[in-house]
Amino acid sequence: MLINENLIDMNLEADTKEEAIKKLAQMAYKEGRVNDIDRYVEAVLKREAEYSTSVGFGVAIPHGKTDAVNEPFLGFAKVKGIDWSAPDEKPVDLVFIIGVPEAQAGNEHLKILAKLSRRLMKDDFRQLLRQASSKKDILAAVQEAVA
Amino acid sequence: MKSVIVSVPFEEGLHARPASEVSKLCQSFSSDIKFINGDIEANPKSTLGLLTLGATKGTEIKVEISGDDEAEALKAIEAFFQRKDLI
Image 1 (cartoon, rainbow over the protein chains, first blue to last red):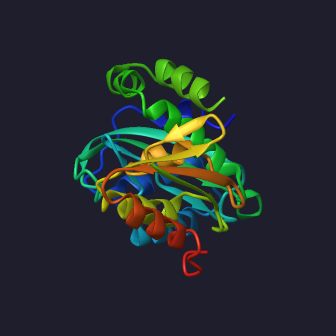
Image 2: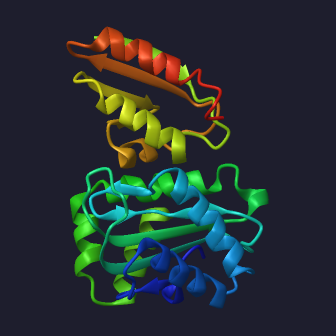
């Protein structure tokens, strides 16, 4: 499974995108998806430095491909309006993080991104993520989106 | 209306920096622009829209442009997909 309840945080405390990324990486580490937090975070932040992974609508999808990842994962957190240098300048409150092992990186994360993006284009999906109060509801919606 | 088919030259496909840059490029034109991959149609002025295409390296994308600056936009988009510095 790409995502499970342990990879979801309904109220992640973070003031900056760096902090949010680090905390999401810790979740993936605890789940055994990441074998080296620092190297994974470094890979994700390197991308962030090149361009913002905010996609508008209050959503950011940071990601990293590196051999610090054991198996592909998708994590999700709701945060309190973080500045993510968004193209529409809106603060980000929904964060998806993707990790893919270097060897597998070819098309795997592009496929996950495409499926997730198709659903994120829809207002009702974003609303569901914002309003859901249980991890179970989020998990069901996200799993269906990336299936 | 102008249209052209471009092939994605970027190693990682059309996401990340290439997506971010082509989105900015398309935003600089007033014309309506569509990127089409099979049955998926996206507005490339939105990064999220571009990601829905799931366009890997070698994917052929049909570009449709209509508006006052369509000729300039066509040229710029064709040139973008030739860029070697983003590969």
